[in-house]
Image (cartoon, rainbow, N blue to C red):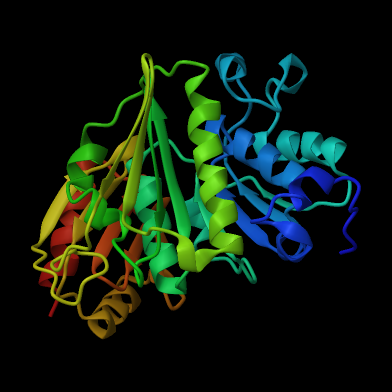
Length: 327
């Protein structure tokens, strides 16, 4: 991609960027999971900054309640898929940016090939999706920037498990957070505050990764305004990124009617045999297995974590026990 130096003149003048940095941005490919409040701000900032390619993932359509905080969308987009509407508006800002828009949930996208990625931005609004992003990035050795916004406060952190904690190290009680999730309000000016911190970290990861503090969590409060930082260390017994995990068998309800279980000693050869006996449709990749049957779906990660979709709780518990006890 040829850089329009006039367009990026003010950014190139910044010592931390320069022409070399602008070239790097032009060749970067970023995955944004969630194209709502944080995602639309992030996508717009990255487009204006000169990022070469974006992959957008979101399964929702634009609703009237989104317009209070989700930039890029107007009343003319109501009822339309967020990813396609966002891509359309981003191309108006910069026609040469490459955008791959995927109207799907991230748990479905896990089994698809994204090609080369340099960075992932978590712009979601629930901890189940964030946990999937964490697992995905750990498996592919990708850095990602976690961001959340609710009420009048937000959190932002750059994460890469080989250099510091993973998301489960930071939030060891993710299962509890998922179980208690519910829709909360958010004040309009909080979103650009949090998003700007997220994109600043994204640019730093792309241009000067050796200077990024991978243990630093930033908490921003918009009413009254304040910014607090603190360090989070890697947990030696983290169930996701540690070899010394002390996981136990566990079953619980998660966000959006999804159920999840943990079977740390699950033998995958036996699991495959179990699926064959059940005559389940089985798909696998280096990250996870996915089975489908009778309108149900189960994703089984190679770390022993299971997600149950389109089940009632008794149905999911029964299958969980069958898998756990299969010899």
